[in-house]
Image 1: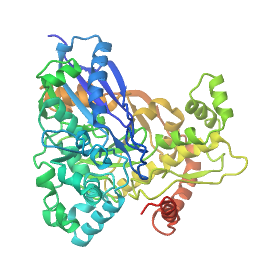
Image 2 (image 1 turned 180 degrees about the vertical axis):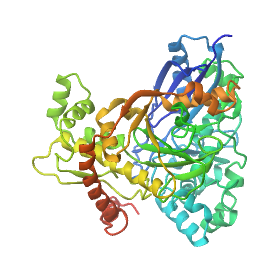
Image 3 (image 1 turned 90 degrees about the horizontal axis):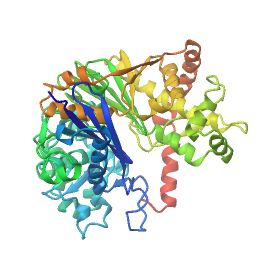
Image 4 (image 1 turned 90 degrees about the vertical axis):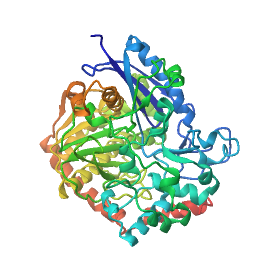
Amino acid sequence: MAEQYAVGVDFGTESGRAVVVRVSDGAELGSAVHKYADGVIDEHLPGSDKPLPPEWALQNPDDYIAVFKNAVPAAVKAAGIDPADVIGIGIDFTACTILPVKADGTPLMRLPELHDNPHAWVKLWKHHAAQPEADKINETARQMGEPWLNRYGGKISSEWLFSKTLQILDEAPEVYAAADRILEAADWVVWQLGGQETRNACTAGYKAIYQDGDYPKPEYFAALDPRLADVVDQKLKRELSPLGGLAGNLTGEAAGWTGLKPGIAVAVANVDAHVTPPAAGVVGPGVMVMIMGTSTCDMVMNEEMHEVPGMCGVVDGGIVPGLYGYEAGQSAVGDIFAWFVDNAVPPEYHEAAKAKGMDLHAYLEAEAAKQKPGEHGLLALDWWNGNRSVLVDVDLSGLLIGATLATKAPDIYRALIEATAYGSRTIFEAFEDNGVPIREVVAAGGLPEKNKLLMQIYADVTGREFKIIKSGQGPAVGSAMHAAVAAGAYEDIQAAAAKMGALKDEVFTPIPENQAVYDRLYAEYVTLHDYFGRGENDVMKRLRQIRNEARGID
């Protein structure tokens, strides 16, 4: 029997990546990346000089189609296979990333009369301008005693679907009225591939308050705004599709984009983090899978449902069927390191890195690795993009304490790595303190591949071994695995994971003497975390208000 292949497409924050995977054993045969032409739109719309307000982050949905047209054919070519042997295609996406569309799937930003309205564009996951709407959603839920709120750690995020939808209604009612559908970009791109609208159970559960078989009742939405009462029936879709299910078959148009055969299986959409555990062979309870990149998303499963303060959500079958899938995370990790490198590293370090033929991150990592824990005398809070877990507060900001005239760039770089590790430890402890044990930890994503110092620090700070996923493209491989299931090559994702998922032999083990120092530093982190993050000192929010007033923003 001829070998069969599946294609996985991972839509990230800046680009989309396609990977060709052999169905029999998960071998990665070829990949390609296509960078979005418009990238993250956070200053002004393309072709406009009108500035966007703070905390906005948009994208152009046509950039996603360009990924299918460029990355998929290039990956198939790199794999050296016959496109006719590809049996299915699956995608994953950053979430919650939403867009308003017409009934036929046309994005509203393509309409001339709405093209210049930023609310007609894609709202990227890190669009945080809907915080007032999120506050209203949370307060109304508390007042009405909504039982679903605690399944999201007690707070719905500004990043999620109804927060962003309510912002559209509040600020651009004409866009809301024009939208026949408001949906995840993940579901939209699958619609473009397979020709029919589906809604995946993963994003509905984690990002759209779908619990116990339904969305919140119309009475709740009416309490938010009477115009929102019928939002589910008018703008969403009640029928959900299971992960690994068949969303449709590749249309002739999409076959032309990708170079694949018309009619092959198109898998139900998934989220980049949630699709990754099976690629690591993780389909059982008690294993925390951390997808570490620009941000970090933490995934763990359990046989039972528990309410964990600050978690992003718990969904029955949200990762694999038969288990409750828990999500938490940090809204900036790699982004913090990138901010520092882009904005605060003196020229001498750029020159030294260039002289050694090293990337600046790698150079700073090498310099920081020369230090012992605690040697730089610094402590940071990792809130450069707010706090997702466990405080769920986008209005928090970063903090660096202990700096002196002797502080150098590698010191700060290491302190920022350590801060993100402390943030992860707070998440681990929140789960374990609330009935969700973590027996093992597996790291995936771009950072474990690039930064060995980071992985050792995480092991030392948390006191846990860190295993590493074999694939450097975990989400794309996971998407290809779901495509194989949708195509019928495997009965379910558990069977696919047994053949196609894998870990590296590499393990990062805590160093006892380092762990002892980090326990002391973590205690100080917790003090600052609670002081600035739990309302005792709201200086971060007052500073934000002063900033907004200076910029003329309500």
